[in-house]
Amino acid sequence: MSKIKNEFNRYDLFIVDIDGVIWRGNEVIVSNIQSLNILIKQGKSVIFMTNNSTKDRLSYLIRLRDSGISIKSIEYILTSAYATALFLRKRNITKVYVVGESGLVSELLAQGIRVINEDDCMKEGVEAVVVGLDRNLTYRKLMCASTAIRNGALFIATNTDKTLPLPDGEVPGAGSIVSAISTATGKEPDYIIGKPNTFMLELALGREHNKSKVLVIGDRLDTDIEFAYNYGVDSAIVLTGVTKLDDITRYPHKPTYVLRTLKDMLL
Image (cartoon, rainbow, N blue to C red; front, side, top):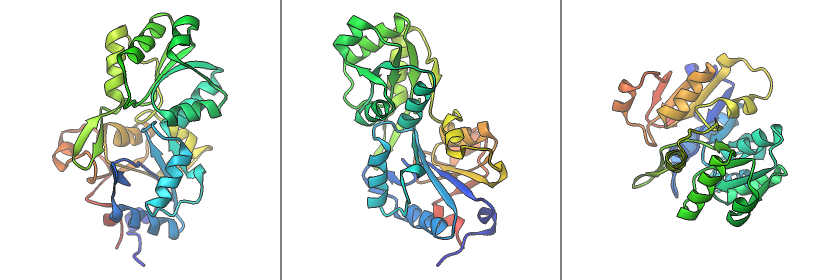
């Protein structure tokens, strides 16, 4: 079995992004999966964390296992959908309108949050509008969300990723939808839950953790690396997703490590 290089062996906890690190669309990134399995087998804690809100944690658990990841349980997965649901519950927000997909709705319902449809949103009003990636976006959804926000509902974004990596290139992400609603309302989100904000990392660590023992791994500078910078932990950019080597030279906050694939962490 390959061994972990000394500079990476000093970390106990690895916070790993999913899109662009584990897979690109339906294409599994085998070398990265093999490397992460070695970390897990050698006793490292690996938590998978994604801004993608389209699936619930159970769906991610099944897909990660089907992709070959040796993941123990759902507790090792954090998504912006799950984090948003916890955020709302902590603030006693119980009635929302969602621009998003089934995974986001599922996580909200699991926390006892009522999700209102378009007709009821226009009639009853809601406490918050929650916006994530929605590949079934319609003009009516944009209209209902914008009306509710102008009427006083909180504007909450699961994340503001501009794009999502696929094998053939990038496609619009949740940030594109958030921007459309911002344009229609003249208002930026009241809260952005996902990376680069630190709410999900605080969930992952739970209690006080030695930050010198934490490494964030991702494929995006503006979310993953910025996220690590905001929390004050080390980071590694892996060039299997959206970031290219030239991008790093122009970005103000440099990752601790630049990896072609996660195999670069091994001897």
